[in-house]
Image (cartoon, rainbow, N blue to C red):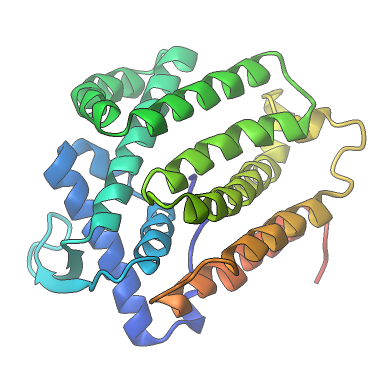
Length: 277
């Protein structure tokens, strides 16, 4: 999910921030335990949002333990363990990491892409058996997205829709309840569209200089209306979120949705001088 879905730390309570970090460490630990050490290198805070939202829909109690890790071998860190939502988020991160390596190998023939996809092939095969629908939908969406990018589609709704399909697959593969999955799917789709557009906007100048594909470069009206589009995605995401029955950690989740995402949007828009101080 590209690293855009993060908290606004200054607005979190100390206890909430510590729990947020414990979720991050929990996903890292779960990834190493379930799929090996290499995928841990692809860990980002985006996966914490996925785990927090899914865990918040359950009555599951969080078990926070103090543990050592490779990066912090001396001082113990709080880690959430024994969480089905964290295990699921860890598995989804591996699925995305495998496809990222595979895409890098196909597009650039990079050595890292080759080594990464080779190292994760076994783990991905296991996950594909465990989550056949999620993996199938992800593969189909990535193939469609690749085709759109190769033909340099100027249809922002098409490319955003393909990426939104991926987010929908990740968020709806956990809950067996159709009503909850529908709401999660709608929320995830809006988040996916926001991520794709904010990333395209963030890379706009570099892509323009390098001649790389960027749907914002190909639009007839350029960056006109992008501010409204981004905030509309966030508003629709909030509308879906409000329909969910959040049972815990509301403060952390809403910090991300109402502050983290909006402040990141403001920052990228200001960098592109679309909005001003």
